Image (cartoon, rainbow, N blue to C red; front, top):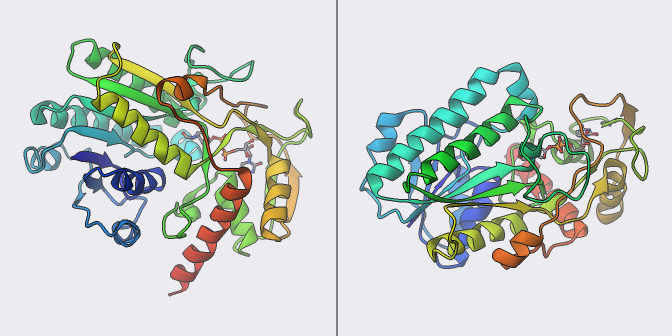
Length: 338
Ligand code: WQD
């Protein structure tokens, strides 16, 4: 069985659905601090499979160790972490405590469970300010601009140290910008506490917000707005299955591998807005504002290594990302009204 922490979150829930569709048995764990238990029902209605769920905060070591031996855990896919960049700047202690103490407790759980396989949810933010693109895995990691990003960089370093003592084999997946949703519209993020581009664009589209702020149009890019590498969350979920298969089959001679998960293309903020309008037939009001501190002008991935070692590449188009995102938003708002 695979323990998925953060299983009711955005990427976690999509990955659980993908794991089950590949025949894996999953134990879902989440503290429900930023997601809902109803996501477990959604996963079951999509897959037709009943998923055991443990409501546990990974900071509660005693509660976590209580489930040692309850399930035959062969591996862990660890998503559970706070991930709001802006909030982490205002409240770094909350982020270091939650993301790092939670990780350390998870290692105690794995050790006592005799489990060595860990897929870790990392981020392209570990590269810090990049000055050339596309980004490859041998780019040096640098101090990320936010405490959230720093918890990801530190976590990777802790994983390396544990793996050096043969206690762990791990694959760290460095996400670029995940967007979109499962075609059912039943899975997705809770957009009301997110400051990322897509959740806010969707709030404008659904009338929850009057206008979108575009943080700068004076960058040295095609149209002056920032370039990012957007990736469909379903493609991201598939990458986790492929990474787990590689880890479980012990295909790698090294204890820790890192892979960029991106499409290898970049789109500007303005291109995203216009593509969304075209795909979904909705006008998006926006206003050019000052640059957001810490934003890089351009970052997108070189994901050749994942293609070679994981036999994975993105399959879904920008249109799929934007239409599925809008479908999710409509479903979310309808349920919210219920
Ligand atoms: C994207 C672009 C903004 C909001 C994210 C996550 C980070 C990591 C990488 C997972 C930027 C612009 C945004 C708005 C805007 N993912 N923007 N108006 O900063 O690339 O980082 O992906 O670990 O955790 O935060 O994503 O969506 O915040 O911004 O103009 O209201 O959209 O300036 O250029 P970012 P984002």
